[in-house]
Length: 328
Image (tube, rainbow, N blue to C red; front, side, top):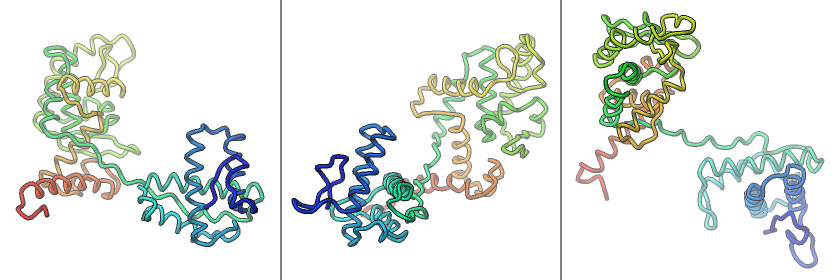
């Protein structure tokens, strides 16, 4: 198979024949990437490797001209990448996608440079990468983070505890939590009004731990923060900063990270981690996925169903450890 290089001394078929039209076209494209686009050496190496494999596939299919390549040809190459062969291991969706991007770039260039009349790769989309499972913490880690909120006995510690209890107790997004006003939480009814994406509102229950933390904060700590205000009115914001203004997203994020550090939780923790943990723990406790969908404010149950993959993994681990015939 022809070697692809930006050098004119490689890519030849033999001592008496020059490189094929396809090899010359790929070489022209690589020269374009190197000279006109100025891509880094490592990036060029990746393109060269990906296109070398593409040329090998085309050679195996008996295709030597750009005009002979069809959309089915490119789709077949993608399938070959995902399946692998005796010389190449099967590629992941992300690796195969990167290779297809190189192929699509080559064909797009060939049309623009007048080397081909049409782009057979235009309809072949890179495979979607596997959906990453949301990160959920075990309950013991969540409880440790909640206990570690803020320096003990301070005004801000009561605010931080209330914030984290609300985040985990309601599954609120960080933007929804910091956007809460005093009147949005009904401690008697045990509900909170959350304003989600697209200004859609939903009322979700809030548990006793969060209610107690919010009550302590509102009665004993928030008045001190309001009194410290030197700027414009907070407009009834629930969670305030040390200057009496509405707590920012960045500050709320810092509260969570610092609490995790104090708790000794080494897993990367973010506001969304508590939301993921909330959903996962509900499903593990037997909650219906459509109920969890409503609680999270997801427009589609499909979005929520990714959490069921987490619980299935947990069940699989228990099964593998406990069932006498689980392992062969």
